[in-house]
Figure 1 (cartoon, rainbow, N blue to C red):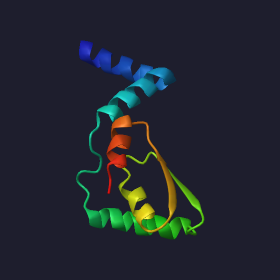
Figure 2: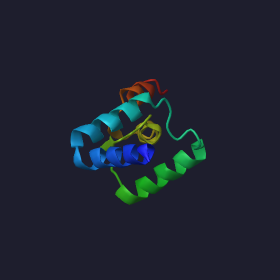
Figure 3: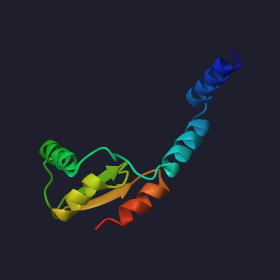
Figure 4: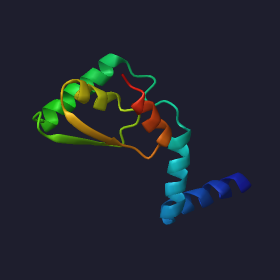
Length: 101
């Protein structure tokens, strides 16, 4: 019964306290060291192609990848000559993104 109460209390905090939700999210993503570790390069290429079709960017457009994670897809846009800015809540994932070739 105590565990059930703890879970309900956490759910209440997450839904009613933006500050608590922000803290939980920040802690989670800053402790993440890798995202999409189960995805292959083919999967990232597929998403890159689909996103490209959806937004039809011109080379002169600036693209913002909000919530970029380790910036796998952003890296593909960059390699193909697009201007792209990335941001993410996780400083760890941003550091990983900066190390990309």
